[in-house]
Image (tube, one colour):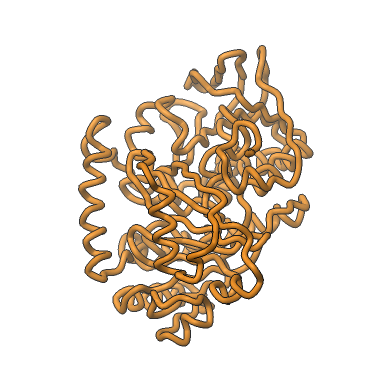
Length: 432
């Protein structure tokens, strides 16, 4: 049985320590009130506490309850459309900055794990898998842009032999290896970061959903049973922030993604299907992603749906997808199946900024690559709160638009747009 109030996932059933936190009651005061105890909120709170700020972190459910504790556990170096697409949009100089930021985000994770002794099955390496020649060409373009940005450690290899060195599957025509990426147990990472924050003097309140914010220069944050008077506020609720700030909600669409996890695999079978212990994903628009867990299960995800809905029989569909990649698992039992939401933006870049006329900062909308970007964004939020917004503004200056279709029609509009990319998948085009 999953830990109480967490979704019944493999992660919730493999927590490595207890964490009991109170509910906010009465009136409190602090320097910075952070809303949302996912990776963005935890990272920003830790960086603020290290700077000497008195921090209160409010979570509507439990630490890591949302996307931060349900995702595929892959710390990917990049953004939704890849580094190569950024060069076309922003030019080489800004692209180099964006790449350095996300590399820094992964280093923050490694530093947190080391400094605070967080046990989260951290393993190094990420690999992309091409399902067609056009994706292989896109991988080569991505490698070239990385090299122009000063990083020549991406390896792209074509052919059956290259694939077989990484995975025991016949589905792919080439590989893309990034030694800078990693994979991990995200919920244990989030809870380890929460313990780190407590050790730095921060306060965390769970089951304390924010109901209202006075968005002024001296904001007050309200929950059902209490309130926090703060000098500044950081909003980090992402897909689960709801309609708390309507003007922000208009720029986001929730997307659901789903994961199944097998029973522990025998050594020989685990080594047959996963020959390099990296995190993997293909390069389709609606992609498959998978990796081995610390106790040698295959964790396999995909099947995204716009609007945050969960279709019927999604676990069966994922199992079928898994068997298309690894028919060797035909007789293997699936122990866990779950889903969760992340948020996408129209730009597919994080939506970052400060609410006009207030001391309220925000960052969300990581569009599917949040493990690394959330961690660097926490540091940038802390810098901005402290009065040094130069690096924060590299993201805040990205033009963000409301999703087409307005509040009622934005999900159907995005679904219609996604059909084009699904057709490209079927025709063998690249997502990059």
